[in-house]
Image (cartoon, rainbow, N blue to C red; front, side, top):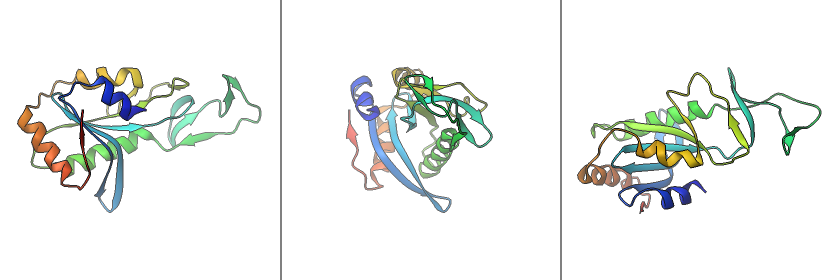
Length: 169
């Protein structure tokens, strides 16, 4: 859904890479989407989840734990998912490390495509913004870094060095 959205909503000057994996600091780091274009480089983590989420010291707390059409299900139990923002920051750091020497900033975000999910904000929002699917295009296009065609090509070539096929949109 997010790959299709990026394909349909971003200008043709943007290149999109889906499902990229890098080895960084002894672990594999998987990225759902990497976008390279005039406004910069973006690593985007997709969380297709439902529910009402709050920041928690263990990750993201879902409250109430389960709902059916917005009505809480009995027998509430605490449900916490790993923090997508921590995941996004690790993805950003691994991509910056991989692109070392190209002097570019990597932007990161978590996108929630499901309209039945609400993120209520938390302390990591400035370092790892959470956006809706409909807000993703604006998030990408409003960034201030201006990459020229040669820079976009150099970055794309470096990413293609990973052996991943990149599709231009």
